[in-house]
View 1 (tube, rainbow, N blue to C red):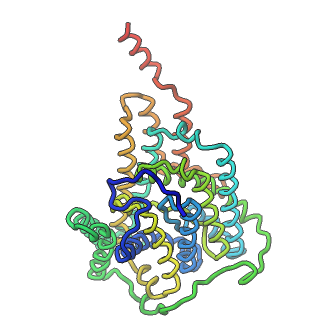
View 2: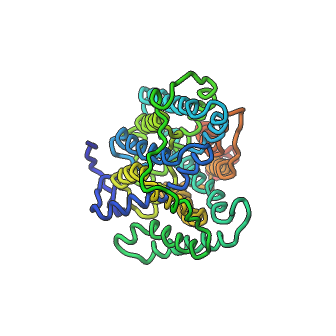
View 3: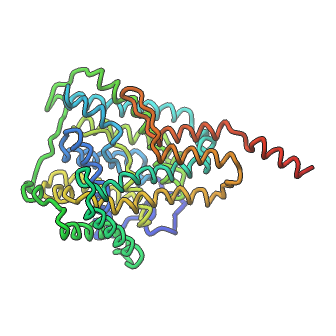
Length: 434
């Protein structure tokens, strides 16, 4: 059982431990499932894995993460994009058994780091991550995804399609209207209603492919890849060396997502339940994925965006999303129906989801009265924003440190190194005092 908290955020529709009525619960959970579905199944499609097992492992990973974090953190675990390059290479040589070994190694790296954090404590986090670092990082996380949303909203097989843009914009505007004018439960599922409306608009424009839905069976067992059942494990050092180090990249992005959730829910998850638990949750979720046949998993910004827009932060809603992901992985036609949602509909919704994340970072700066007349703050925010949004990444062989990871590390270092005031500011202050 989760420990009871004295604090309750009365400014939201449902706080973390509030349980919605069953009918509302189903709609809210399916809304989260729709929001993350496109990205979660895209990873296995690009790698050559079964989307059904990725959906199954994402649901299992979500439930494990929520359990390990003592039902305090409303986070959804979906397929991670960070490992696509090494997974594609491994799939062509040793196949999934090698990917599984790399995925499990990723989870073990998380567990080792979580153990170190547990013994070090979390006092260092407040010093390393003040508002001037957190705000720009959160903004960069949201805005760095803008290009993905724009591509989904405009490109049809790498060719510009005006129909995609029209569908995306109509989907976004309708979702805005639903958020602004609907009341009660309908307002809480405005994103889900926006996706459904966008789907019908896309049908009218002839850009929905229903062949997968028609041909899909009603019941379909995911293609599990369980060691000692489907295959005999053997040692794949190349898989471990190519995938395990990337865990340090995704850890940085994981901390960024926790920062967003901290601001969103008015809590400090780094302290309660603790960064060691959030890292353990991610690690165990990836180990479970590797044992089942899925890719490594990580927390999803799309679902954070849903919570920010709907102001529904209930962990029970995320539990429901995890359960539905597991169930839908066995129902071929339902999974195929969700998979048939065209990219411009996802792109239109993503304009809002990713924009709300960026706005949450701006709110951190405003709420904490960060002074941008100080050069120190201006320097830190400027570098974090441009490097993070522009994805100025560092690639070293198989390792690819994303712009967000670089920006986060740089922001932390600059905050620790730079003086409170620049020399010119100290001189001006002395002259005024004199």
